[in-house]
Amino acid sequence: MTEWGSGVPSSWARAAIEALVTTRAEEQPTPLRRFPLPGDDSVGLFVKDESLRPTGSLKYGCGGA
Picture (tube, rainbow, N blue to C red):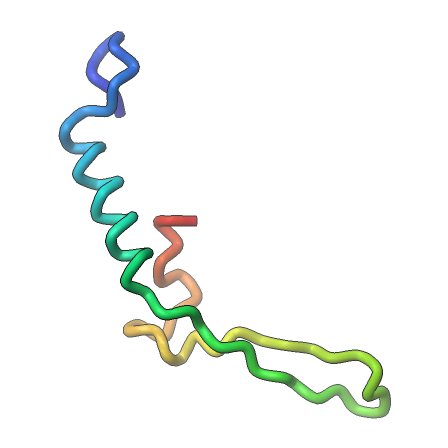
């Protein structure tokens, strides 16, 4: 959101963006876990372990995406 016609973010938008940036900076990266596939060791499948997030959700932190 911007102040009407100015192109400058409103105070609400600035505060919201700052909160997202701060939260993102404080987050620890989610670890990748190898998921073994049957039969072929030449292909590796890795999944993110989102269970370590405070909510355990894939959606956690998406505001900064």
